[in-house]
Image (tube, rainbow, N blue to C red):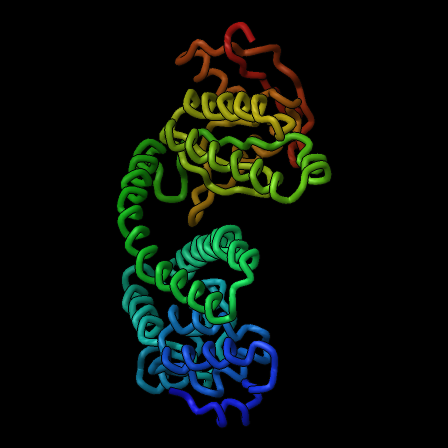
Length: 373
């Protein structure tokens, strides 16, 4: 049991204030979970006292170490630690700040041990890719909590303690369950990545290149959608598009490389798969009540492989082609069109010469359609 007098002296508790019993219950709960008075004073200053329960559930109560201590113990040089943290997309930790738990220490040890095998530059690039993915997962976790649990608590007029317990339970779920799910799914994603590596030429073309189809699909008039619809409907429509894109790309053995605002970049092992992906998404957008339509751009060739991304002239053609397409139209360059004609019953329309940004000569693009469309 905490000392109400000490909490009052720290400015955390006023027995005469409205809701004083609820505030005291929250403070006692935080103390029971390992919070110090200093922790609570800082959280209260930031207006995040109930959220401290979630922080304690995610990070524990220590022991915590500083980068300087890790350097003195031979775990990692300060410069190396700073490089790793920044590559992961995290703000710098001051050398004497005790903010690193045992899992952080193990992560740094793992980086140091892997440097001999992969080299520091390659490992930092990999860390950037991992950090970007984890940042997206973290934002998604905040979105699902806010849209479900948090909104319900606000509507019900929940107390600070009830809100803190919800944050605590949600954080424990994320810390305990999500890593297990990620570990299981990662193995399957690695298998699919190996398949794409082989399909793209594998060791015959080297790690820097991959012969694949690349596509971009872009929502039409997304600005109008945002202006015309309430926030909940905007979120629902964009979520439906992203969900369907993920499903369709996976069903054809491809990979969503990234979502760029209202645009999706994907790769596929065959030109036929890429064409089917784009057309199925065009059809989905045409039938959705809130979306104004979709357009696509496709290309085939040697993609420059990055750490979780693809680059090069072939990617640029697809990215520029989608901006030339009309709503409901999928445009593709010659190499991909030739493969589609040889392998599918899809129809290729009249070619069009287009001036694409970044290309000196005009590029010929063909619309790809379903028979009878």
